[in-house]
Image (cartoon, rainbow, N blue to C red; front, side, top):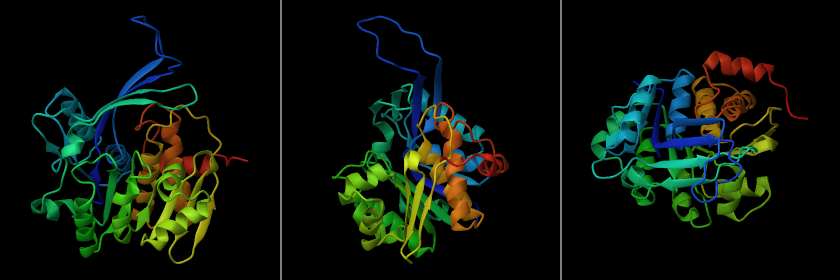
Length: 314
């Protein structure tokens, strides 16, 4: 196959500033330490990280016809991502938020939905889009045109071609579950945060959350638990809790996307489950130690060494 992974879904341009304690009153000015632009989104952040981790990565999403699109495509190319399947849509802006990153890493956002609302995958693109053993769909919840039946069609095609399907979402709520449940039988690895998993399922215990999605067809649940680590629950009965690393958090933007990228990379390298979780957590942890969804990750070897060197949180 031409690619190691094909990453479909939400591509955005993040504008981040830190640390933001409050928005100045009136027209006043306050000063912060850092402002960055990054390619982000549940697909964009993931594809940059898979490329940095050494995978041949195809980006499949939509941007507008503005200066933000120029920057997104340029940056994806700079990281070695194949952008030939990216759609550039006239008359709409590129999806973008302004994130005010608080000292504790929280990141309240102001978001322009833009091009991602208009993204879909035409069947004429299937041969290219599915020319990878792993297909990642990221961004359900903010993909207005693709969310719903169109996503079912897409993932059915992926499984028809015997691809491994990984999945993550964004802006999950009790309403999002209506779009997610029909997709679960076609998802091998369902990878939301535990907060998202709880909001959609109505369950509180981690194991009960996993059972909810496994009972509805997911092959495996891999939940990020923030400071509590990660949880793995497979339909074959395997359950595994992996503790968090003891690190100083700077910004949680892109943490979940980096975890996805790390886990996808682990699948590519056929790591055992425990090592796959540790590697994914190391990738996520590296991103959380800097500003933006592309911070911290340098290479596969560097992430592997980080996984071995970092201390487990006690």
